[in-house]
Image (cartoon, rainbow, N blue to C red; front, side):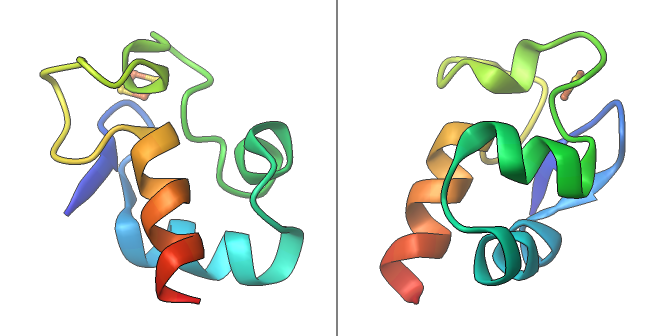
Length: 64
Ligand code: FES
């Protein structure tokens, strides 16, 4: 499941980043570089990706 197309970041990577750095958006961006190029995936309505970054972080947190 793609979270960031520009940096080719998958949900699995977000899960690892959240486990390591917490659910803070900027911390996850630092870990993965997701959302650092076109910034589309920072918006929940971005249609370039399967699961935009804020939603991916939320889901990763829910899954523990
Ligand atoms: S899709 Fe994430 S920065 Fe472009």
